[in-house]
Image 1: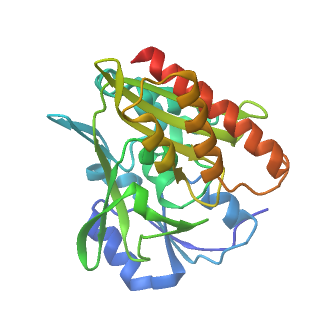
Image 2 (image 1 turned 180 degrees about the vertical axis):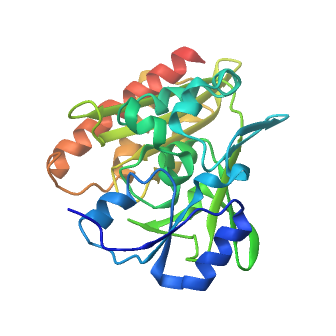
Length: 284
């Protein structure tokens, strides 16, 4: 189908984009890579008369390092995440996850900001950002503020971002230790049936720190606090891993759809989480 008519804008600054959002209110939307918004517009499931393209704002692009803190501009593409050598060295988990998103054509256009900002529970980056305990940087008519990734998602497509705010960047401390992002999907390019990001750090033969988060197993990404508590302080033996997997699966709340019934999704989740934990331990 063809979209309804709309006015197109391409501001060169964040302030310019915020001004347009404030001017046109509910009739305006910002667009990053467009993979979520354009299909909805073509199906005329939304009535947008003013489209604001963020692609001309240089301040929203790039990857910077300040000690252990990594900051990624919202308009940085998945392809750039994959090919940035400094980022891969500091946070190889990012590259591992990005390579599993869709296909090369999508990754050349899809951005990290678009992936995390619209609240689609099937997107990979929201769960990954919860794994990394990332901070989201937002700018709106009321100024700048930050929201933790683990507090940002409220329900499917509902987030803590206000209508007149733009997500400008994500930042996090580069993790140490082992990592893994495991994903099961029906075919190349598909969304996950189940996916999990895991971080594991070891000290003196015990788990000193951990992080576990799930993708597409609820109406929001799921940070598995109980699974983390099970892992931390343990020797990571088989019984502990089994208990952590059980805790993670219990934290999930999938719904039946074309990817399978609830029981199947929970079964797949258990396999994926165990694989991710085992891989992260081996790398640690």
